[in-house]
Amino acid sequence: MNTLEFQKVTFSYSSRSFLDQLSFSLAAGELVGLMGPNGAGKSTILKLAAGLLSPQKGDVMVGDKAIGTYSGKERAKQIAYLPQTLDLQAPFRVGELVRMGEYPHEGGQAISVDEALHIVGLHHKVHKFLAELSGGERRRAYIAMTLVQGAKVLLLDEPLASLDIKYQFDLFHLLKEIAREKGVSVLMSLHDIGMGAILDRLLLAKDGRLVTQGEPALVLTDEIVQDTYDLNGSISTYMRTSRTFCRTLAVAGA
Amino acid sequence: MKPGNGSRLFVASILCAASVCIIIASIASGPRFLNPFSMDVETCRTLLAIRLPRTAVALLMGGALGASGAILQGIFRNPLADPYILGISSGASLAASFGLMFGISLFTLSVPILAFCGAIATGAAVVLLGRGWNGLQPERLLLAGVGIGFFLSALLLLVMTLSVDDGLKRALLWMSGDLSMVDWELLPVGLCFILTGLALALSRRQGLNALTLGDDIAHSLGFNPTRERFFLFIAASLMTAAAVSMGGVVGFIGLVVPHVVRRHVGSDASVVLPLSVVAGGTLLCLADAVGRTVAAPLELPAGVIAALIGSPYFIFLLGQKKGA
Image 1 (cartoon, chains in turn purple, red):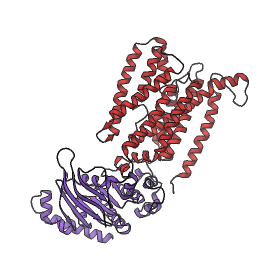
Image 2: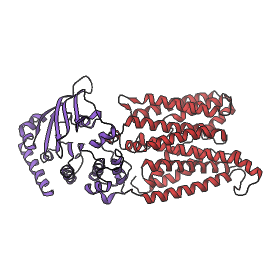
Image 3: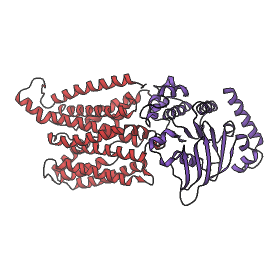
Image 4: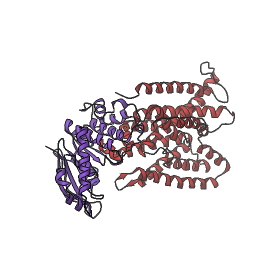
């Protein structure tokens, strides 16, 4: 069953069409990457999916309804969005932040604050201020908030940016666990080709349209990547090395 | 599971106990010491006519300013935001000072009513100018507030240069927080607006927490950031307008009290808002009591004393290593 579906979505910031007739879908429990060069429209796609922007044409369907037809609270139970720039210095304790995920619920949320903190491995830091955590831990705290929120779709705008390789893999394993165990669909934008290679599926965007989508091995070919990113010269060694590196670490950490 | 509930309760208890002690001390202190537990007719008259209304107004004003500061720092995500950065106090001061300096005193409440109208009109102008293409934006609101504030301050200086001497002195006192003219008549309207603003803010406390994380996260949590910001801005404006109309411009409390409260109890608005009311009210009450006692019969402005008492403690807190 699809948890999120773009149906011929067209969007423009001004008179110029930015996204043109974009269609794709996410299945429950899928971990999907959204890749493409800067300016390809990745953040715009995520904001449309989150309901922060409204398409001029087409529909963004969440569950069986268009996202614009949900009330705020109902939408929050379906879909959660974490922007690229999180306020990592927000003056809250970890527990306070995670408890904000309860807001859309009148009690009876699927995952308790305690459980969410255990899932992300921050149960022992509940009283810590966010500013006292590492960058990776802070992102985990925000993800715990979305778990309490109970969203079936988790949208992440470049969550791996500015994290070292250990935290990148920690986050990858956490997202994979959430997708597999809780059935949450995860759509994340990213730039790292190696990390993209270990996701379930990839969407590759350029100039506001999807170049291709599918399994990473079929999307991240030398030719497609060279064309999409306008690269000259051979990139096969780089592609092979980064894919192998990330796959090895992913298996080792799993 | 709620983090730090025990320590919050402890801080709240200490604060409330300190508040009660300071209220009693405030009622007792002044040019003439009154023993609230042993009263004669004269003492009772002074208490009812002067000390009690003055203490009540100081508590209300300080509380309103503390809560307004907590709201504005949250919705603007700016630690320097306070009730005066939005120009609301400048609007109130201009209108009130205009009345004071040009002798517009048709009835007792003329000046507070003028101040209140000035504050509300300025707040409305800031909201109108703060609207961007996608609703109320914190940066635009802040810039509109600062711009309007500077403009109104300039007008105020202009009016002061044209004023008569007695009015000028009273206007200057007003601008530094003047509680010497307080009586019971000011209380009902001020109390009504402050309670309305506080109730509105408390009903939006979850939105305030979410806005502190940024508009995108607030939206993701199911809030409409523009709507939440609008209601919270109205709440802060109501409380600021009421505070300024009752006793003039008292700086410092709205800026610093919420920070001090957060240092002790975290940033959850459902705790910060009520405790900022108590802490702000207590500080202004203490400042006013000190201001009318230390150099009696001369009265020192409560705003100045509040800053002199509060700043060293705030600087001490900044020197402490803590996460928030």
